[in-house]
Length: 106
Image (cartoon, rainbow, N blue to C red; front, side, top):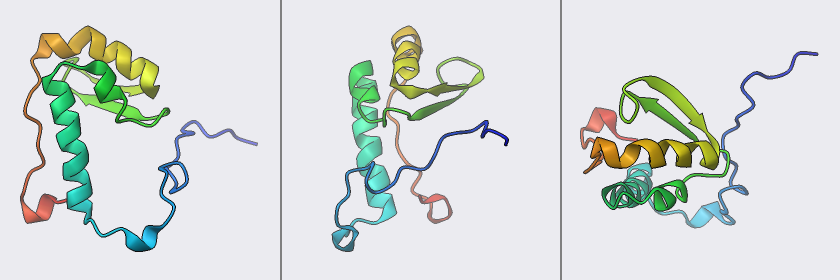
């Protein structure tokens, strides 16, 4: 029996703490914008702890030439914290926002 080399799974509504999906009134764009605004504010404050708090325990950070000038994936809050502690302040990353083009909406 083969083992799954990619054990990550999409978060379930239980894992996300959602108890009643019938009253979710926000659009995907609103949800993404709300999360990204919190993410951007934490990045602007160079607050690695606040950034990491926005991720699930087994969350992934896919760095595409942003903090490391390389392609890499950091798995889990511990590795993401190490990355941010080492590179966030040095990069001067600021003002992250979603593109508001209809074809690129979440």
